[in-house]
Picture 1 (cartoon, rainbow, N blue to C red):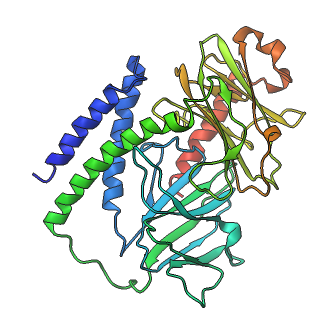
Picture 2: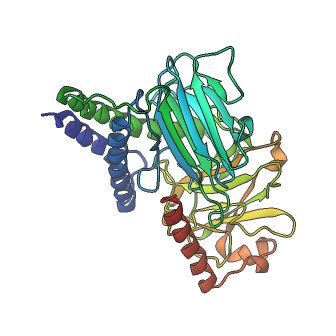
Picture 3: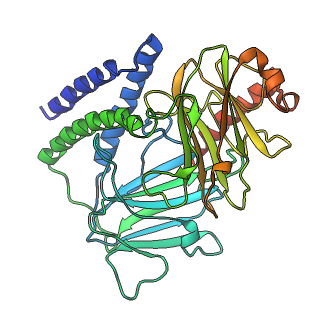
Length: 392
């Protein structure tokens, strides 16, 4: 049976979910099984996208195939490549806050992250007045132009990230890839033996990605003191111009975490975003709940600071970040397309306060107030924006 090994991998994956150390409640398990369904879809999708001679950009993660504390503000795409071939990437720049490219030498595993061989954003390429561009990735060439990037030994995947700051007004661009010299031709038919092999690979990928992203927070988050966040630091993984501040929380329903951070100057950091993640190391529901905010979405106080209010109970405030029943979880702030290095005073201050003391403890409390109709409008705007960009 071609699918037997994949079926066995699904059963093993379910055991990984059920035995995860943080599974304590029915909600934990239900979310884990939902995460499993998305991981099954993603593993099949990624294996069937493994076409290095006739590559195409596949969505790496999204609202229903989450992994790796996916950023609610980002469209992720990847294409598989080989280091001895040349690839042509053509596209048109959208109006999003950031567009970046990264070449990796493999995929994530439970014991290591792939090395970043090349990473840059669109400030490093020539773009025509109409927003169009053509990039070439391949072997080193003495006559290479400014839009040529050498593929180092082991190059295996090209990753593209398009990042939104204002969900309502920014629009995604266009992007395509082909191996040089292949346009107008077609790949040979795939034999049944190779198709069966894909199911086997998909099963291995499924189990590996679950183990990897349950282990990943142990490396970067859970060794930190609870209810704190780090100073801004370059994001692990080689992204060219991204800094992060990370942490993990554990809050009672009568506790509120107030995270205060300077609103980034747009000319220095066009993208700044904050989000919560579940213990499955994936984003919370960012479509129907406000579990993340960019600097454009947040209400900035008169002193130039954003104060996020992480709470289970509704405080009636514009910058409420909904825990949606998650007592524990992950915290992350990202800055992208930076024009300078970030310093400690660019980062967050964290305070845990009793819910009932918010009016006295939160500066500019009255300015942050929203009524139920205004809150519903905020959620409606998120729902419409995500639906629109997923068809972009």
